[in-house]
Length: 311
Image (cartoon, rainbow, N blue to C red; front, side, top):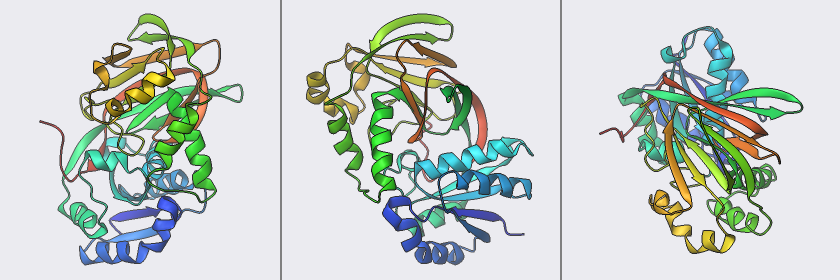
């Protein structure tokens, strides 16, 4: 049995997963990494493959794709239920559009360097977030490793994923859809319960992070730590479209919490309800809608990293 199962999304990064696999496989072989490879053929299959690998006794998985592929792999690990998740190690070779989780851990886009990081084998235990949401008159659960959210963010993600599915993908696609979605988006009244304390407000978006980056480099939860057992929550309240455009810079430079209409929390649990449905997403994957609940599993999985943000 090989040490690693490699799960490749051939469509990630507008087909880079398939086009560059020969480079990636050579890099893995050159670093003496023993692996079996599985290619996905559609949405959700990475989770099925990951679950099957865990059930077969594999405890090390390399995800070749973007943040969405890594999210599917993570959910496959938890779906298997055959072992403790903290006995599993995840590694990433990023070929997606945003690559936000890898950005936080210094995982390079150069495949040879990314394979070298896997060979070096620096590991840390990483928190795993979860959310429940409504879909088709039922409550569903999803795990996330980087950032989840609801509101405006989910609208942009949904539009972006639709275009990716049609083969239209680039590093600017998220930014383009952000501006386009501003034309029609309306803020929504919601009740937020943060570790049992209730508040209500007209909200633009809510981001819930283990990680610091989303949307191709935006820093909406700039102080998040992946191993502190806490969720970082950023709530953008009743802000105007003009103000969003004027202050677009703060979405990227880490100063987002300085704005008077933006609140930040650190918590273990967040519940969001609303009269009008607000859609959710996790690690760039479009999900259902409110009512939604977010929680944290501390130190729940091992990850391979290049550089650490932990001081």
